[in-house]
Length: 302
Image (cartoon, rainbow, N blue to C red):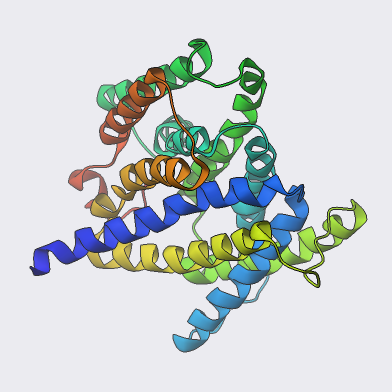
């Protein structure tokens, strides 16, 4: 029975994380704009992660060395990708966004090669090729998307995957400035609040919480809470069970994102989308690190 515990955590994390995709779709359905949404998402994350950090009795590092890392992770890990994804969610189905996010490990591979963090592998190149072919299925087959006008938003939907892939390689190449994973996200959330708050007010995208709440408001808060809690749990399983096992959460997040979108939003997908999902899974398997890649103790892209 104890052998099933790691898989239970994996399923819980993946299913919970997958639910944030349709919640994001709901959040933008009311007309809320990206900067306002990002501000409240990062504010809630800062509160939750701050409480977790206090319980762990770990002081948050604040010095000239670590502050640039907080800023970098805030921008490439949340502000830029979320601004793009929230805009893409206004048009693209949540399930399609889940599929595009599964490209993260495949995009991370060529970035790792350029930064000298990994060596060329035909196996991983094959995985990258499968991922690219899956995207071509989505954009090239007329029946794949409900509306041809959605094609113009696919590049925008790919921005988050690109940013997250770069984020993982950034940490692998330059480290975290002395902060732990949870502390890094906490510091980035605090910096992000300081950036997006004034921008949201100045651009007219501020969301005043003092009003009668609707489903979009509940979706914003729920998504932020899920992200904060699940990220903390993900850090836990990486440390306890290792990155090779933990990276398999990518499969669950993608499948759960599609499932939640069908259940909550009533989305339905044509045959090419399911073929693209199969190709994505094969691509994730081929580019995922194996045991030998992690034996030297160096961080690896996810």
